[in-house]
Image (tube, rainbow over all chains, first blue to last red; front, top):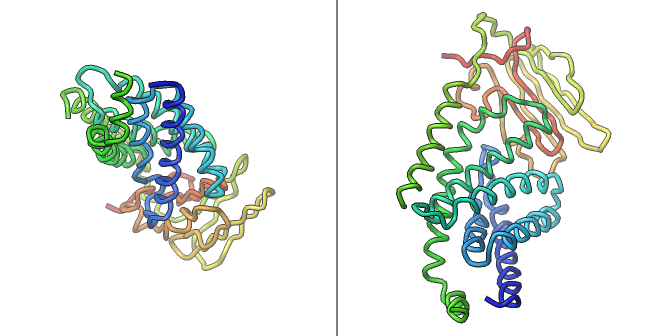
Length: 170
Length: 130
């Protein structure tokens, strides 16, 4: 993929993540804080496989900062950057490994996103007992990761324009 | 799903089960008197005995404002001028319902870094009713 292709694709994927993040925010809030589908995780997974690790990190940072401003919630940037960094690090270590599919990477990414957020909350609030909240958040994060991982897997097989774009380089 | 995908899922579920089993329980002193502990950054207020109906207003220097409604045996976050309103949606915390609440004895307002906890007079988390 040429540098221009990469840049364009990254920009499109960031735009998609912003829309997904905004839409997710419109969904009814669950009574349990911290639980959301994390649809942009699925875009990041695709970015990891198709564009590469470092562009994916840049996309994650840009998306979280912009979404924080769009939703007028600057505190959220701290939490989502912490979650996003940890999650993307773990996903980049797993993606492409033998025996690990996008689903496994998605599950690990969903869970570590929650872990990162709770870790920051523990630091900011000085409330160590929050760690036990992970007993609930981790299975939920795994379930959400299962969904986003499968969506990413299906999308990577079926997305026609991107497929053509990738074929050009081969 | 490939082989190691299941391994990842298994590790995660085991870890959360371990956390669930390790979660702290109160010392079993039989002390069920309900008190409210309010914590904001760098400051912990005195315990508030939950034996009457009234409202507590917590205002911080950065303009954040929370209103806690207390009533005999419990409390809830009534108002908050934060962005996400998670704390208000967390509902009542009473001695009877902490067993069913995900955050057990706590209500947390993340944007305002405010923690409300239902505790005993000794400051321990109140034990869930069996």
